[in-house]
Amino acid sequence: MDLTFLTRSDFWLDIIFPNRCVSCDKTIAWNETFCDKCGADLPYIEDIPWQAVFAMQTDEPANFDYANALFWYKGNAKSAVLALKSRNGVNFAKFAAKYLAMKFETDGQSADIITAVPMNAKKVRRRGYNQAQVFAEYLSKNMDIKTDFVLLKRRSTSTEQHTLAKKERLAAAENAYFISPKAADLSGKRVILCDDIFTSGATVNKCAALLKELGAKSVSVATICRTDTSRKFESNV
Ligand SMILES: [Zn+2]
Image (cartoon, rainbow, N blue to C red):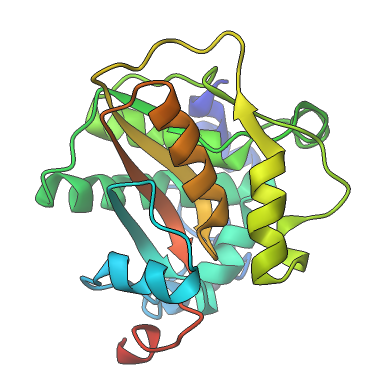
């Protein structure tokens, strides 16, 4: 995928296609991601005990070893992550990858491989890209770690994950993801798994289990946004 085009970071290209705020769609300078108003009101996540948040959202043991996200899934970050489903929002993936790479580096979270939660092939064809993979590609550039997107696959399912209750999400994730027949052996490798939103954690937990089945030594989860259904941590921001 030609990310140079998607980022619209080229000045001249921007004259033809004006850059827009990824949250409110207002026209902004070519090198910005948010307008001043939206950029001043972003729900950044400070340091959170991710193990505790995950444990409150699921009864499952965590198959991943670390997780971090840049924003709570609300306000201007929520509208920007929803805009990721259109090409305009791709700037947000670039923005999030830059700052999340800094968080991972601060926490000593390096890796050998970066991968993404897969989307089923039909949906990728319809949308033109998998937003989790676009985010992973930017994170890869920022952290100087190679990507591998042929590790996991997703079956097409009739129901969207976000419409399901907690128990149903776990069952759906259990069935939806599987190891690609073309997957490489990950023995001894540290893997970063990317997705756009961490909701119940069911999806990343299943994908982390599959990466461990492939031999991964550790799996760290990087998401742009995450929810806190307990509201215990989110209310502190
Ligand atoms: Zn805005």
